[in-house]
Length: 258
Image 1 (cartoon, rainbow, N blue to C red):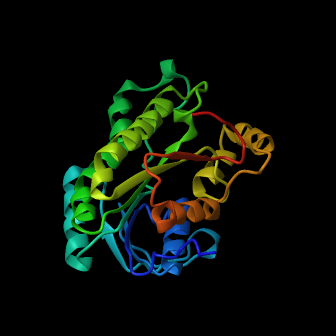
Image 2: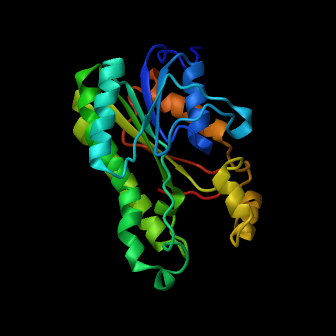
């Protein structure tokens, strides 16, 4: 049986948000598989231990706010200048926007635009800037992340659910456009992911009971970043060469649905 990372050696991978809870696990897994990794984020690079003691020394680092189309175009130029090619794009960015969680009637309409700009807008910008690089090479793979709130309706998630569903339909529709160029795009959908800064914040806040209940209901246990990294390598590797437009939910059995 082939190793899941077979075919990733020397591939050039861009991981946006690659120092985050999930992103750092994916970055480390890609590096272990032999890929050249470019990490992009809104703050300057820091060579420091991150989640679970991982110390990431990315091949290169670029400061980029993917909410800004001009930033994404500049990032594409940097990738071209440094590596001359691009094979994998993974968007783990998770900009925080306040005032949109909870009951819709209590949400702040002044923050709606900023939230949609963060997700799905950032994914739109990133894909638009990186597709020419992927199509100029041997094709490649794009991987997005979204929330299960876009798959399964729930109270107090009207805006989060709507934006997450937008990511899902974007992935499915774009997959049909770019398949002829040998480019695939898939998506991982999550609910609660243990051992991440966001999960720690939830446990320390008013949603703590909801997180505990979710952990009890997920009969396979809530996933950790390493579980998502394993799936990310598969979806971006040759083993998934005929998979595109798919949204894979990883929640330990917490919910089921389209």
